[in-house]
Length: 361
Image (cartoon, rainbow, N blue to C red; front, side, top):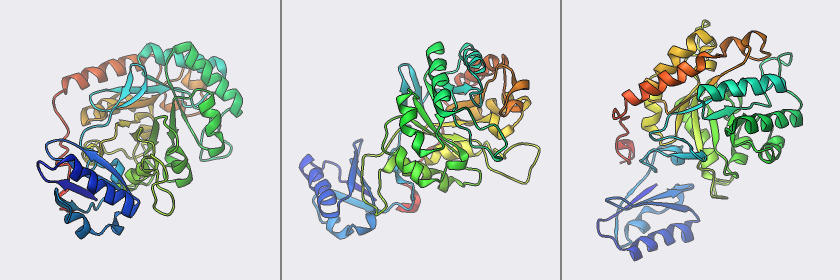
């Protein structure tokens, strides 16, 4: 629900509306002040009696929002969100942020050499994946947890880069945070695992949320809202939520077998029209072939992606996990060219439309 205040409404009138929403209905408010002050109501707004709100002085309109992913929607947050990952490293808005490194930590030597290769290429956030969720139990699934985290810490120390690592098991979250993992990633297989998403709503670390194998746009953004809302199972606002969500597009399963996943570049501007969250894309996991990674990177950036996540490995031929899609020294050329494309398209914005969707009016 959105409550739009009349032009010239006083601070006292605004506070009275907020008090009614929070005290009478137990919901939370987010105020957006621009030319017209707007109050975004968070929670199960169906309990709100519109008439009781409209009767308050200073209220112009009450608008019901049809989207189920309110926190992730531009309806509540018109401007692009920009997320601080580490000093000097930001995602979203005008920034083009590169996440890169090995698909999985296999050994200390492999991890450190791949990390240094990624740093030299110009990545901003280093992939340091300890756990791997694999289709077959016979595929490589990572080292023992503590050993993997120790190597991840060594990668961070050697490069000075912030790290991102995929969390598969809820029981490992505290260990990840204690080991200094800066960004938690939710993989495609876990994209709608609500207990994991709810737990991540209670931390402040940025979260990269991958696009699920079969998720449509609504499902993907609803998953983001799980992390952001802080809602409990009874629809009450139990916490402030985690606003630091970064979307990562990798496509969905389709009938085409020549690429790993079907990636529609048209989804990039569409997602940015619907959501204020930073949006990056993954050409390694969508294409599944290093020969496709470079061109797919350029296509994603040209379409409006605000970052790229891809695999960089020191020796792909010997990789235990997804070596076929990993790049090596060419990563530097890919990043440099992508940055030039991004700069060339600076000023060609994504049409975001009104902060209030037509369907809701």
